[in-house]
Length: 330
View 1 (cartoon, rainbow, N blue to C red):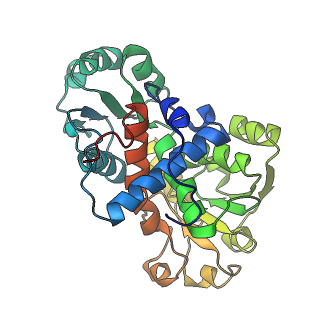
View 2: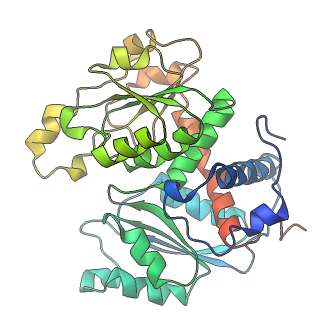
View 3: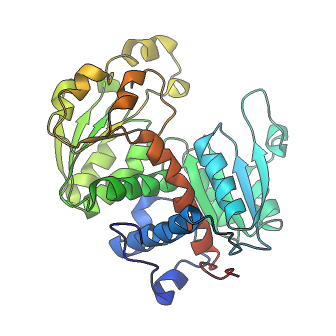
């Protein structure tokens, strides 16, 4: 059994997920979060043992990505294949549209159509709120793979899974969030889980990329202690977890505004020297220039391990909403 996890949850806890949509971190309780964590650990052990799984045998996942993605899309597709299921995919980008969305078909209608083709839908959209539209249209479970500057629950789940693996219990940790906190949907989701563990959050960002006020207010209501820092050295010095984010060029209408802030918070070897003992660095990736390559040699550089953790976590999500955890063992 992987350290810090308690084994596969009870049938009752597993069954509570069957047929639900996973749209955002706020829908989770600490108990349901731990169900996902322990189910992910169960699947990670299966992966380490190189066991062939059949839990999703005969089932199809529709991967509908209307915005570019590497880790999220490929790990969800790999997760489905590792579980013995099949995948149908729409992967679009500007100038390379292949679905009827390019003809003006609404997201609602696209979901209704795919509801008849698949057993579960994983959807990414540049439109904030698209996940709820998809869930309202489809009868089968929908998993939000990122909706604009809104939520990214699978990333937040793999983030907290990483923190548990790397640091043990997240209880009371200090987490520094640095970079683009306005458009960074990963941090918007993660703060809900940090609140469950009474973490302190340190924020450092350009003023125009500060955490949205409604999210800050929600954190304060949940009792999260928040501190602000003007520079990266001050932000990291007391942190147990440093969560870097890239400044998202695609969210800026004015390229000059992007250029003015993109280099304000850079993690390099000199910054690492300011860490407290055993601090870890996380990043949802892709990185652009906000973490220099020399930082990769630091033992606490966890961002590539973090990305790999997406596979068992997304296996857990798919198997849970389809109600098939452990059903296909032979």
